[in-house]
Image 1 (cartoon, rainbow, N blue to C red):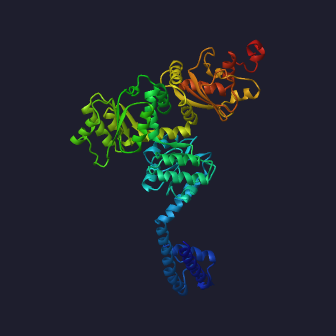
Image 2 (image 1 turned 120 degrees about the horizontal axis):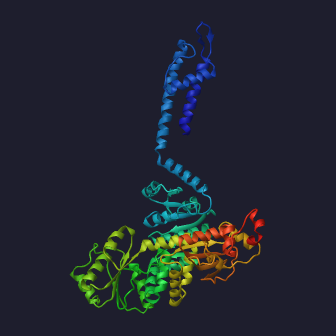
Length: 548
């Protein structure tokens, strides 16, 4: 804009100067010269072609001659300036700079920490929908403009700052605020795991305190990320292998782990059908097959691992394939696992297996949520969706850190421990209990914290009392207590509460709402603690025996 502005300024200056210097004549025939304001006013509406009139008096011929020159000078300069402005508005570089400036301003206006999501796809879309809110703000970067536009059209509230850029470039990460204390988490779940490792390295160098959530199925990458200090590494193959192992060796731990991530603890759920005993056939084309093989070996389950090529144009089930399965012992097998990276080949494998052995237990790997309706219609006995695993784990890492910690600690327990907890949950809370996290501090437990600061001890069993009747037990089970770096599973209800404690509880929504009300409200807390109402104002003087 520099040259167009200079052209306009010079054209206006020449025109105005000439009009102020050339002598004119007023309506009485007296000589006069235009002042600066009159000259500027006249040139403004002349140059913009809004209209034309000789003001304040009729021009003399010398003035008209000068104005004729100024018309061509200023109008041409004006059109040149407008043309340049239009060209600039359409310039992609300028548009990108304006977008980047708006993006940077949006990040600056975020209060608290935010989650930096790298790449927008089925997985991150679901994660964003679950997380975005007042407690967790989201920032998204993707190199494809159509994906950024699609996210912007979703109309999220609060709004999500978005940026088109290459997430593997340091400058892009810096621009997104990776070095800021506000950046609490970085989510990198790209299909290209080499990029995930590169991004993790750059992020850890730029901000060692940032919490990384990274997808990695390659064992070398997993080890490398762990050495870098990345704690939240998601290997969906290992997770599925672990679940298959638990289903064979510790079914109650398996059901509890499934409940933490899906919220389902219903014994009547058809997905709780136990895995059959006997020989398993694994049809795979890569690392997932190897991971499942390790899980079955650990559970002492006999298996046959078959390598299936996925470059067959999505076709499986011809005569050659059926003979291949028959030779592998499909008719004598108890279960078959279709774990290739092609969803339709997985479906065809299971359909072919059912033809040869109608009673066989079918287990499928579903790579993307896009095909979920087809897999549901196929009536597969067990369906493992890789994208769903990534969503569940990532959400828990960010929104439910205690739940994630609970799963890690629980996996070190035995089946007897799992069965006891499973039965306790059903007896105390009922089917489908929900998970909640609570921190004992002034922001989340005002009344309880004030009581503790007076030096008065309170035990956790007080929090298990019913708000309506303090003698009754609320539908709450405390699963985990985190006190600084110490983590305790199923803490003893007689343990004293300390300020700063964090607890994970299983409860009904109503019971947890009551618990929050108890720890926040002085009168409710006084009732469950002492078994009597706390009187206020004049009543405590009228009835001192009740107020005691």
